[in-house]
Length: 249
Length: 200
View 1 (tube, one colour):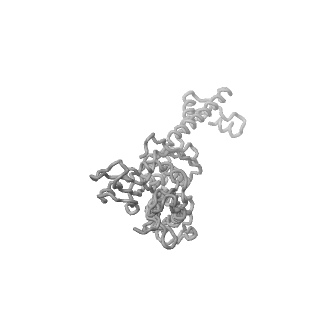
View 2 (tube, rainbow over the protein chains, first blue to last red; view 1 turned 120 degrees about the vertical axis):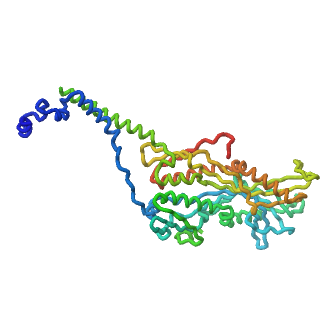
View 3 (cartoon, chains in turn brown, cyan; view 1 turned 90 degrees about the horizontal axis):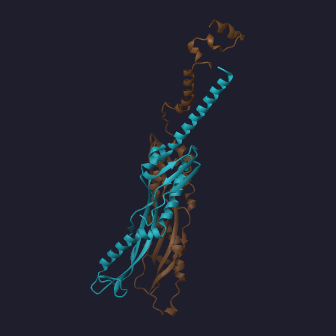
């Protein structure tokens, strides 16, 4: 030890002179025993494997639900396409429009007006515009979060499909007693039916339960995003307080 | 110890340390295939849903059935009968307990493996269904049988109309959006190949 103090400090002697050290210090030198070298090498191997073990589990603080919903791209999660393969009974009404059986219209019975059995396909895209979600739509009370959203609605204009399995066609006619050579032209009524599809598809969202599928999905998504920290309640209201919703219509 | 001996020990130490890091990476890689239940908080919550209702299709089926003089169904196109339009809804869903996801060390990239899409039995929408022509003797029985036929054929018709492709497209959009919302910038979605002839 004296040698270390006199030589090491003044720098005139080699600092690591193992022979001069007591046994514990020898392990730290490169001139050590085979055992200590093996231990050193094993430690080198074990260090990366054991790194990170035994860290205490961290309990994160609950996240601000408004910040969470603002920060994640959730707009597409509440939107879905639906396809309708529609066979409908259609007749021309007195106002020059088409009345469709599938929309709950009353087809005149026993009248002499032309009726067609028409097949067509319609694709509707509906959902909730979550990208317009505002802080005022989210109410936080302790560990309870209430999100108020407008009812699902059409996101885009319905598309009348006319290809593949959805090729539109008149399957049959009624009240056309004229000879086949003088059959009434149905193209005008067909056109009215396609217009009615576009006009009435918004009501089909509720009629065929597409809105319930969307609501279920939105509830699940919001519960997944916030459910670890909060009890989530999602309400849908007919009146929208979300900007941009009126534009969609 | 000689200078070469010291150098050797250092080199071996470095090699062993590298091997240790490599081994750790390998072990970590093997444990990166997860079910949703064994993942982040959000995905665990999603797994609780069990079934993700992914698609709904509305189908119309025309059922034409003739009856003979004794009131029994016949294949002959003559005689009395019913021309019924049955409107059904058919739903498709993803069984979430079988969804797996993998990330290969890159925390921004995820691969999602979705099992075969399931199709539920069709539900006849009575209020939307109607008879186009009906001169069957037993009107009620004819309508009931035609409605039953339309319900039973709904799933096959939905598969023919492409419900599985539509449902896959919807599932892809959903999972890509969901994992992006979780912070993954690159999400790849894979589907199990359905067994041939299987539609439900």
